Image 1 (cartoon, rainbow over the protein chains, first blue to last red):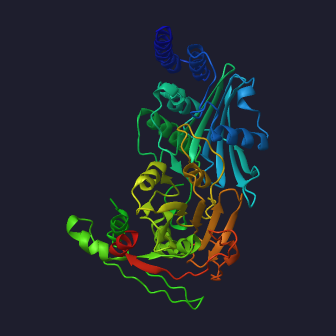
Image 2 (image 1 turned 120 degrees about the vertical axis):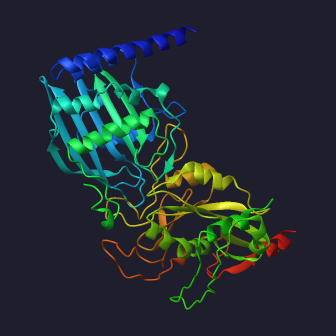
Image 3 (image 1 turned 60 degrees about the vertical axis):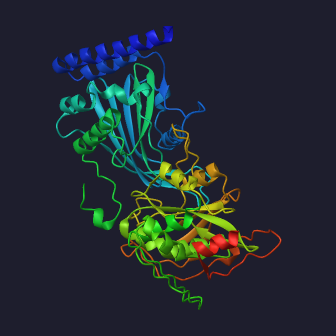
Length: 236
Length: 249
């Protein structure tokens, strides 16, 4: 009973936080989004990471940790940065080319790294794959940071880390997943989703995932995956 | 209830015809042209008389499946999925494949695979291997020529890698057909994938096309009894549902 009450208070606080945050966003400078995320911090009391039913971390978590190590990135869950948001595109599955979007808030400004990397598997695929960075660039959103951050950190944003609102996600064999990592005010969240392009159960969580992914792709002109020569003209 | 023959025909009902010919081995397999048959109660008597191929080894059944489905999988740019099962008929062991599921682009829903797995087989038949195709070549974007086999626990706890699926069901392994025309096998406890044949067609739009060698790696076939040599006969025997029912009795 007490647990339920706490949960409801938590949800209520979260809602209030985001209504308040929206107000802040409307009138504030770039640090407004950070305040949103700090409010998210205040309403959640622990680190949230997607886990398997046995309580262990998922394979995606381990893949992210391995790739992070090889890409020489600081582990986000041990990062002292006040705010960093990472989106891993096309994880495990069969993808050889993967993309990572890194958004930081440093010295009062946003900074973004776009990393493309390739994965080289051993023949027997038993050893961890070797990760090679094929491209690393700094990016700026086409419509500007204010507009971009309003689109991504909307009032629906926290839903992607709210395990209580997660639908039963269809499991796809060979399918690829998107992973979101966030550190804000020394609290860490991680969640994973099927590629929204193939996911049929488009509840509010998946619509939010799709919104974030598409906004990043559009604002930073990130190419969609190419499956075949004849698909190359389909989208950039 | 035995649904297997009927389910097989439901694939045929989509306008698919099956023809097999391995000329490189001087083996001519009788092509089977199957008429499109809709799966209605009136088609049942016809359905039971249509013959399915039964092979002497799971590897031969995998090659047969690859000949039947890999081109279609490449053309449609979709993964296809099926199971290879074993059945004993009049004292002899045969292998065949179940109806094939068409998945999505570079993925198959696990719940569809599981639905297929839970459908009835013939009495006494047992699943031994999974088999699936990776569809068209992805121009180097995807690892289409290999099994996906990283141990990936999912939030649902269900398997999402090729190797994890056969491990989940406790099967002997899985076969894969690729855009470059290969049939490969990954067996439980062997810890690596092996080539079975280079005998299927390449994806016609492949980035680096190569000449098909028609090579078959018989060394990578496995016998049911470890003491005997594997059966390398690739020619199937055809049985109708009606004949199978009689032999099972």
